[in-house]
Length: 141
Image (tube, rainbow, N blue to C red; front, side, top):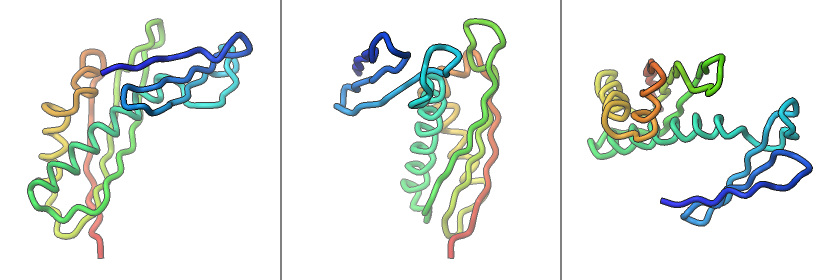
């Protein structure tokens, strides 16, 4: 896996990352740090990537089990250390999974497998952050 990150220049703290798959992602800092608030912060993208990684796993696990999953949303809330490096110290993940006939224990198992085995991001972040997750199932009509 590769990625190139380029600074936008001396007038701010914006960066553009070009991923190995050829996609662009913009990042910027807060105004109090010299940024102009034009894009997400790098740590926000790390949190979003963790949510995407885990949601991907949950959907894939449910689909492979032939469950009728129709939607998956993950709401993440993170706390960071007060001092540098300001690592994540706690991450709460709320999975909201839509489908037909989904069983609570099956969806909870998918979330647990993602967190404990498949999601590289959460396994990495678990070195500094405590994780908590909940599962809500919404019956789709």
